[in-house]
Image (cartoon, rainbow, N blue to C red; front, top):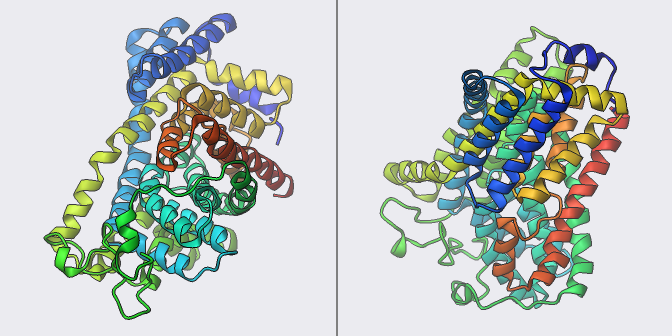
Length: 492
């Protein structure tokens, strides 16, 4: 997908506020300030994006009144379009964790897998948990399971850990309703249904390559026995710590959400929901949003079936319906009472306040780039160079990811920079641009990424071992994701 010359005409609709040299300087000052504030001064990305946006506007020559208005407009529109979706996604994920539904999925899949299929099962577990949950929450839930499976199968922690982390990470970077992809969709005005379908299509081979296949190599490079963490869980229940309830028990093993009636908190779960109900609930928002995309393709406009699919497949409605269904299938289905369900929903929101602010500030940064004319200048330069918009999006996201360590910051900043490249792209190409940016945002996690240290400490690895496993896995996801996006672009 090469930029069309008509982009030059579209870019001219936004009049630059200064000369090209001054705009280049403004862009560089803003991005360098953003990187330094996050990496050197440990400033929260929300504050860094806000300051960076005002710096860009000031250096470009925009009045401070116009700079504040520009940032506020972008912040408000992004918060309105993406913030509600992130909140609903957090509620859904918290219910899945608190009810024991996540445990039910994990235990059922893993307990029915043999030694040879365990890495593949762990990749599936990571992907399923990764669909509705933020990366950090999914990581905390998966770690005890990874340790447990490694001990039971007597294999290296890396052999089963890398596949699970690959599934989790790929969903985080490529598939909505995660904050990064959702933010890029909102900023680039991409079709969520199409992006979701293509994201799942791309993520499956990516997970296979970076998960079970790479794990075979990584386990030879780094052979680590599972640490003693969660040791008490191995001795619980059946002696393996993994049961799907088929032995007549409720599958409880003492973990969060899987507690038995004797130790259940007030209003909390007394047993775990069924596997089928949990799986259908997890897949519900995906099915609803995919249904909208299929309806838009297969049915004529005005068709009542298409109208119904468009309504229930709208991201806000799909996630709202999914939360309401989860309250019954996961909440009531696990024995939680009304106060327990409401408590779970309420406690889900404080944890994602920072994410919402970062995403919204990224929208403000984007609007500043557009209003100063910097975006139009970038579009004109890319057009003259004949560079693929997908490759450019990936490269920009990679640069910001390496500099800041944050996949979300890389996604929202890169999407904002590339907004002026959109006028001649069709909906499918715009969705592919979202995926290219998402793939770039995962490139080579290293010492400035919180996820790097989480994995290192949980797995008990040295920095070098973590780079040879986790960092390379992230790079494989990023590069293979770009390659697959480019291949899809050739055939659609």
